[in-house]
Structures are given as C-alpha cells and as structure tokens.
Image 1 (cartoon, rainbow, N blue to C red):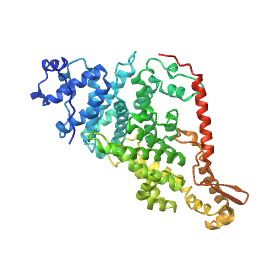
Image 2 (image 1 turned 90 degrees about the horizontal axis):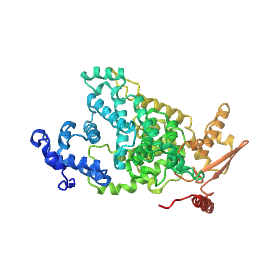
Image 3 (image 1 turned 90 degrees about the vertical axis):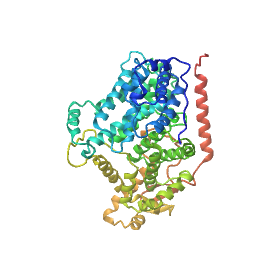
Image 4 (image 1 turned 45 degrees about the vertical axis):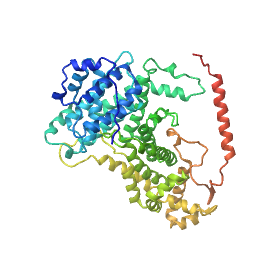
Length: 538
C-alpha cells in the first residue's frame, strides 16, 4: 500500500485563488486533494524549492496516481490551468510532460498517433523555452526529473521509430496522419531530435566544461569557459544528461564510435552527477559497455558491466525497502540487470578474466551452461545471448504504411554484424584452452591439436595474432575507463618467436607493490597541482 504524502496549503493564498477561479471539483471530476496538490506543486516550482519539488515529483505524484488515477488519466491541461490559475505556462508544460509519460506507460501497445504527436510538440515547446531565452530560465528541478525528461524524450523517439515501422501498432485512421507527419517531418524526425540534444550541449557548454575539469595540469576553472548559461545549474545538468541521452541515441542507431566519443570527457567515477540518479548510472554503464562490446574491446566492456551489476546489487535491498513508486514508469534497472549478465557472458566467453566473486557466482548460475557452449564455439548461443542483452535498435528512416512489420530489421542487421565478428574469433576460446596448458608450445603442434592442415596453416597464424590483439585490447582509448590501466586484462599472455609460442600466466605476475607505488606517485602529482591552484577565499 502506498504511503500518503502530506502537503500544506493553509499558509498561502494559492488555495483561495483556486477557489475563486472557474474550477469545479464536481464538474471536472478532480478530487480536492489532487487540486490542492497541483496548486502546491505549481507554487513550489515558482519558488524553486527543489527538496519539496523532489518529494512532490518522486513520492506524491505516484501516490496520488495509485489512489485516484489507477484506471483513468490525470486531468488534461485545461482543467489543470483552471485549478492553478493563468500565468503558469512553464508549469503546464512540465505537467504535460508527466501526463504523456504516464500515457505511454499505461498503454502496452503504445499510445495513439495523436498523443505521440502532441507529446513531441510539448517537448519542443519545453526545449524552445529553454534554448531561445536570452537569459537563463529561473527554474530549478531535481536531478532525477531533469534526467527523466531527457531519458523519456529519447525513449519516445525510439518508440515512434518502432511504431512507424510496424503497421500492426496502428489503426487504419492513423495511416493518413502518419503520411502527413512523415511528409512534413514535423514530429519525431531524427534531425530535430538530434538538433535538440546537441543544442542543449551547445547552450550549456558542457563538453568544454568537462574538458576543463579533466585537464588538471592546465589549471582551468570550468567557469572560465562557460557563459551565464553554462554557469546555470539547470543548463549544466540538462547538458550533462543530454550527453548520456546522445550516447543512447547513437547506440540505438548503431554508431558506436560516435557514442563513445560523445561521453569521452565524462568521468566514470563515484563523484559523477549521474551517480545521483540510479537509472542514469545504469544507462551510462550499459550503453558505454555495449559500445565497447560491439567494437571488440571486451575487457573494457567487462569492467562496465561488472561495475554496473555491483552497483545494482548494492542498491537492490534499498530499492526493495522503498514503497512502490513511479508505477507508470518503465523498470529500467530491473530489465537491465538481466541484460547485463548475458552481455557479460559474451565478453567472458571470448576474453576470460577475473571478476568480482559475487558477480561470477550469479553469472555461473544464470548463464553457466550457455557460456560453456559459447566457449565450445556454438554460434547459436552467441546469437541468443546477444538478442537477450542488446537494446532495441531503430532505423529513423523506415516507414511501413501497410504490409509486414519491419521494426526488427535493425536488430537483425546488428546481430549479423556482431556474429560476423564472432565467427572470425570462433577458435579463440578453444585456442586459449590449449595455451593455458603450456609455457612453451610449437606452432605446428598447436595447429595439429586444432586439426589445422598445412594448407590453412597461414590463416591459423593469423588467428593467433587476432587473439594477441584481443589480449592487448587495441582501441582501449576509444572511451572512458573505470579502472586502473595497470590491471591485467586476461589471465594469460603470450608472444610468438618464429615457430615457438611462449606463454605467461598473468595471475602469477601481479606486482602489488608496484600498484601502490604508482598510485602514490599519482597522488603526489595531484597534490602538487592543487598547491599551485589559486583558491580565492569567499
């Protein structure tokens, strides 16, 4: 049972304003408690009272939804405007964002086309208010709401692309409207969506600020590269979350290099802004890890997946103790938890390495048999694991007015691309198994173990070099890293000297003392930089 959230209107005249306007509880079917909530919510937004807004958004809204709107929608914007009075344009836009988000979550087959269109128009109006203003908008919202706005915007774009590629999701009356929308390209088109996200980056100067934060040696203050918009808390956070929204968008489009480039200046550490919003943290780690997986940087992908699983595992008990909230929202963390194990199984089947014991134990329970088949070269297990763990890819230009559903075509293309890479590495798990048995091994002998004849001997040496490339993790610098560079990436290493393979077990070669010495040196360097900084007293 939901916990009720109390709010007090008695100290202000806003309740009087509601009683004197055209609102009628009986006529509009809105309970007085809901009307009082909307008036109070509007007032808190005007006063920029972030802690109270967080309570109203994160607790009171789901609570009232559960008690009064389980089987019907919240009142429309006209009723809300009569309740709170005129002159609250920004609050009405924010309320409609919540309204349409609930509408999407309530309909398993998705909302009607008219609602998809109206939701986009509302987002466009919201971002227009923020981006076209000559001065920063005086608005303060909790981090979780700012992230939800960006996240839902990208989600609804994804949903629309899948909707227009699947004729089974719409009725005959919507076809003509969809044709009109596509001809005019005035709703959920790829160009305005990317334009909005990149405009948020530009307006907030988030990339320049994060770049300045990363360069300790240059002694740069982020404020020195930002104007009044970049120094605004609202615009900075929206720009930050827009980076992660762009990361997700590029992955859904299949552009993994650009996805990693988008977040190259985002520090993946416990102090990141994303850490204040659990779904944002999970989204960042999932899509960065998936990008590394598709670019065959399996060690980096493993780190991302393991760190994300550890975070979810640590916070699971806390989540379970909290009351059921946001019942109209998609359970991102719960679904991603399952996806991460299947993607991690792929990474470790191709490039085994040490991971946290608790995660390894759960992975063995969930995917142990599948990993065994993948290690033996079963391509179907790779396909099934990928299909379970990957996101819902999209094609922004595919429109099917009638006929066969083509919404899964992007998934089939990405799966084929993934499997082509896997097929070229099919022998690697078996190859690794033989290498672990020896310290030195002639190449001819290894070739005979793997039933390679003289005709295919040269291609076999190529496979050896491919495995060596994976061990060294070429392309590791393509994105942000969450762990130390000195940690071994796999449990074996080797080199080929003419016709002899020399194998080293990296488990034996862990130099703990060197690890601490290296980090002591790093700490001293940071302290030297901090001493040189000119810190002005307040």
